[in-house]
Length: 79
Image (cartoon, rainbow, N blue to C red; front, side, top):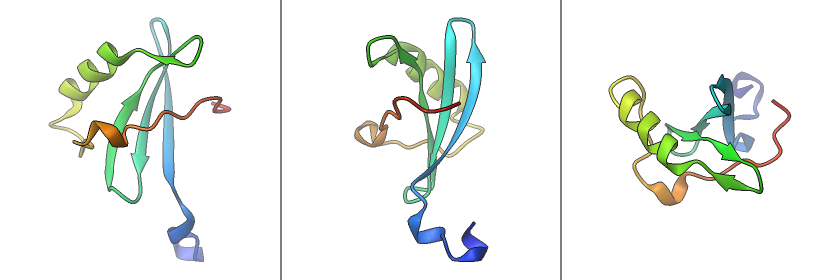
């Protein structure tokens, strides 16, 4: 997409997985150049404790967004 001139318009990439209790997402922020986990629960709530555990497990494997204020949820994704 960046090769076709859309690089400045990209916000993030979303990678979805099925966890034991539901969906788990890794979000890549193009502007920040880092990943962060997003684990939604019903009622537009997040499973923050699992997000923090995922961060701990993946810190050595992926560049993780350090600023938690930038861990934006993506509600209603079609994945």
